[in-house]
Length: 415
Image (cartoon, rainbow, N blue to C red; front, side, top):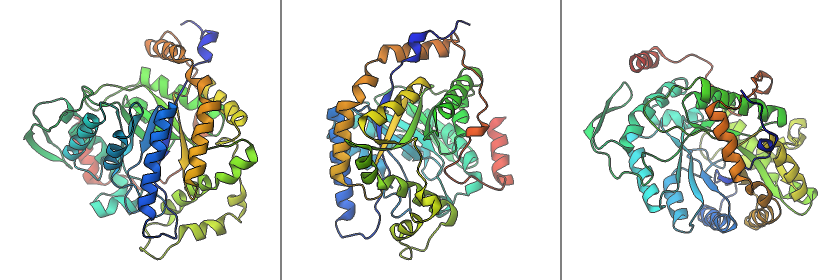
């Protein structure tokens, strides 16, 4: 195979914004209303400024950490205030939703948004979310795979039936159908970095959390594309989506010091995520995450900071983005709405970044597509890099194997 041409090494990336709808206590009677209205205003601004994607999570019962249990409603509202920005489910929980309802809601959103939906698919992050819906944490991957097989053909088949272990659906025409045919682009949530390789194995885009440094980013990007090209096995006959996106803490301000002061919410994001994973579920009304966060910030772990986030002046952020660009990351998703970051600071950050940083990276679209075509065609080979030194995790994974019931279901559809 031919070596990588020098001009391929300078390729552009897409930029997205990311919403968990975090709302630390104390809450007032208007807090959730204000949170959603501010977020809609931010997405409207991002659309005008030329950002490419707006991603919204689905979580349940995770108070303070994520007040985002109906993303399809929020994204539909955003669709009526925007024209170009892609609207991403980051993700839909396939384990806690019926496949037909997922297909119906996503298709409707695609129609009202004029075909701008990106469909991320996830398993659910913890027992706090899964158990109330009758799902076992240790079986969630097997349930997810069956849900993919049950749901996705509903987008393009006039009649579809599915008879599995977890989902049994008679012959019906699931309507409406999406504007994007056969379906919106597919992504997988990769809270565990090693799921990046799994996403490629299934032929879907990877939505992952931040990389520690350039070496980590390059290792995982290479692993993703090498798996996508050489070890792909789709769960059913959907259209593949070769893309890797990474979420990073974000705040752009005139100086590094000002950005750090305004970005306190990023570390709350990390703290609350770990707390739910380690100690949840919590009895409602008995916890105050923000107060516990103030205590945690005084510990050695709470004082520790990483230099990999996109928090700083335009010059600082530009230098860090160039590293991700050299590693061939397809999309950087900016997490601005976290903790008690203010609406005014978020709006100012989006504007400054769009004016001072984004144009340089958006100017190389043709190079990006040429690089990707060459890799997918096998004309460019990527080094195999050991990912184990970079295999950090942001969420808990099952510590016991799937149940015999789940394994039997998996063997049935695999055969």
